[in-house]
Length: 316
Image (cartoon, rainbow, N blue to C red):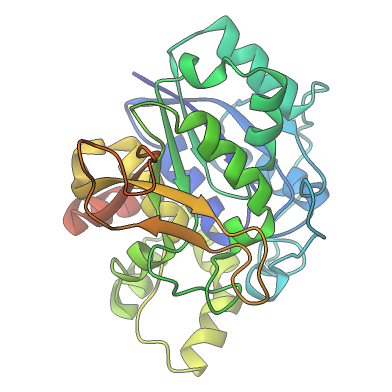
């Protein structure tokens, strides 16, 4: 049975992904840590309990970092709405977060259960960066780290070159790369470009939202506003970045192609701040021409039938 910790900023696609985990038969969601990103963590703290209510799931959830490490906070409310749920009419929950801070909870849980937890990071990496700064031993005590974020070919969404999660706190990303990426197994990355290569059709989306269940209705409500806007703009397919990262977390065998690379964050620059640099040059004896070792497993191809099945199962 997989034991999973989800670190999230609980926007629309995060919520879809969390549904996948809560309904997966071979997964226990042991904790959800919350971070400012798509919306401020005060909104995230309202959204996670509503997902738990929907699935009748008792999962401890913890309030984490309110701001990025260095950068000014930039939200993604234009995508997810001011509340992270696209302004959908979803009843508020009476569930309350734990008193313990998310960063302290990560450190405690991992140390109490070394090599048992897999971590999926669906938002900015602020909580993980703070946790590993406080306890540098954490990377040696987790089974796996999967991250949704970054660009691997400079096709951004937050800027021309940068993906939102990494752009929101690039210093945190670099800390995670320098620590969790020191030795194999490296963090596994679902990038924005990989997301775009694994989109669903609008016909599939309409069917997904119309299974006639509370969960499919929930997905429809929180997605409706953003979907209407991008369809008006002529977008021809539906991208699911966080669910794609969740899919390879729940079912690693869905990965059809991945490669190890040395990666780093651009922390300055007029145009490129927040861009993930991937060194694609051939390595010699496992080392780049600049003397760097790999620190990231970049996933580029996923089995679409299996991905779709996980999505469908989550709303049935």
